[in-house]
Image 1 (cartoon, protein in one colour):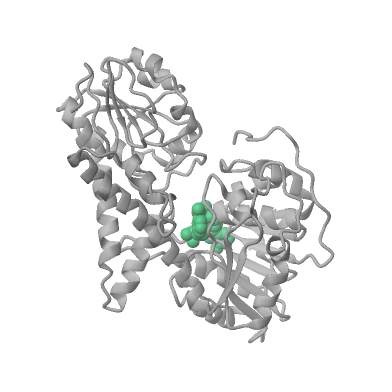
Image 2 (image 1 turned 120 degrees about the vertical axis):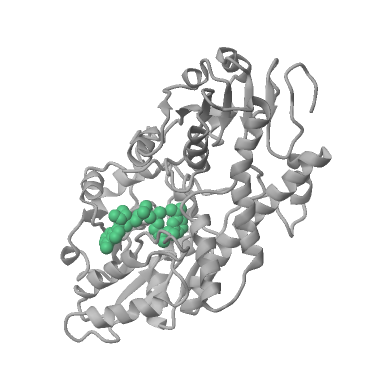
Length: 475
Ligand SMILES: NC(=O)c1ccc[n+]([C@@H]2O[C@H](COP(=O)([O-])OP(=O)(O)OC[C@H]3O[C@@H](n4cnc5c(N)ncnc54)[C@H](O)[C@@H]3O)[C@@H](O)[C@H]2O)c1
């Protein structure tokens, strides 16, 4: 993975009361958690069944693209170890994090198989003294209790009541993971076990007191003081994570719904959200209209919440609507294209941006995926560009048909239209006037509203704004 930082980071001293931590599952969340805790002064071992990942991490290489994390990984190596062997990681750990994936099943419920496997493997290596098992994976309410049961059932020998299960949901955003982990708004700890909570408060003390020296790659933001420590029951903590993600998804869908109406009444969504965001009860964040949310969390977590509701015969009409609006938003991209090109058969369409958002190579539930799938089904030829996600797409999107372009210029050459699907700075800062000259037809469907000026002789469709037609006639 390409490096994001040239300056080496310095590693602060080990904490005097540093803990021994095992992090099970070293994906986006586990890797970040492990690196951050080692940086803060604890001794950390990351455990993953993916040996390729373990080997890469052992060499100090980050398997994902996450700004700053690569430099901190290298700096923190003296207090970090990576393994696939539970036996070498669990018995010595004071705190064991479960950070495995919880991907959606076809019915919307999260697949808890990985959590069950991890809990059972942990159970077999518990040491009989008090160990704290922390669930950081996003899991439905009640999973913490179920994990306790699994630990009890699979522990070798008599370990009952010698472990505490705590829910500690994660709120980091990919692309700004380090910043979010070091300077969180709050740390949520849910458990009925006081000793478990106390041990985690000790683990997070450097964050709670902000007593650590900030790394170069993530300076402490001006005005930031300390995160709130929120202690709750196990089930409330599990619910907090889902409710937070569902609310953020709702905000985006709300902005998209208003954006659609703006197009009808000739208002501008950017002006509207700017105006409403100054109301402190609303705020400006998560109100960007676009091609809809994507990524590994919002789609999965809203579906999981709806499916939990249905298990209890409880409808969630607001969330249902948010999901529907999001789906409509993805179709809208193609509708906007068809409005100008009509038949797409044989047309060459450039897609700029594959990742679900900038500063990550994560492709999970990316709007670009559905868009490429639909375009090829309609007979279009797709040429795709992304500053970092092309290698990931080569591995994960083998079922899609598209040509790769190694530059924006190459993608646009001879194209009948260009779709901007991810708001990378590279696209925001592009000299669009010049870039569009290579196109056969200068049509831009800018689903992220990145174009600040309207390039000459071009037609530009954005979301929630007046269409700009070539020839100067607003539609
Ligand atoms: N990615 C995010 O932005 C984000 C943010 C907040 C919360 N979450 C939640 O955190 C959890 C993890 O998400 P992620 O994006 O890091 O997932 P991921 O798919 O990137 O990583 C999961 C890792 O777990 C490993 N794994 C699976 N089974 C294992 C086992 N039995 N033992 C050891 N390792 C095992 C996999 O090999 C993989 O490396 C999910 O529940 C997710 O909803 C994710």
